Length: 164
Image 1: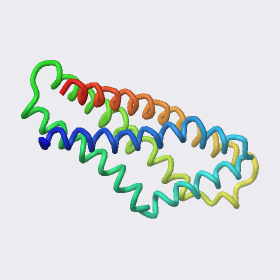
Image 2: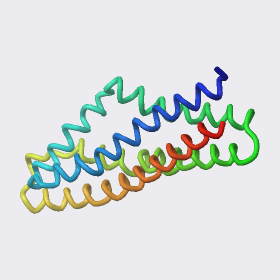
Image 3: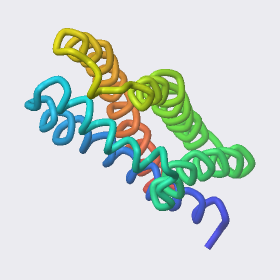
């Protein structure tokens, strides 16, 4: 099996896992915890994020692996592909790196970090409500953007695999 083929299959698998995680948060996790009161919502998200913040090894392997695998696939693709195949790979890579990873590092992680630094128990009800709105609305918006871009990128990688 050629290195490009192996890299492409690995990128598809890891990017699909990330897309599934984002999709799961978008359609199950966030709507589920949205039913909690403000402090309950903030606390529930904070606890879930602590698992990631504490360097959960499988999460790190999948997330960092998806970035590395798409970059390696892009490099190998530029060296080996021609015509529309290379354009599909470039577009999929841009969608994934700029449309999924950039918002994650620019918006979602800073929101998560601000929540980690919050003493939820010391907030009164109006402060908790304000903190929730300041967190939940932008976090969900950027997660929806990441989810759509991840699904599109994986779809394009699958198309490339079929055509390659």
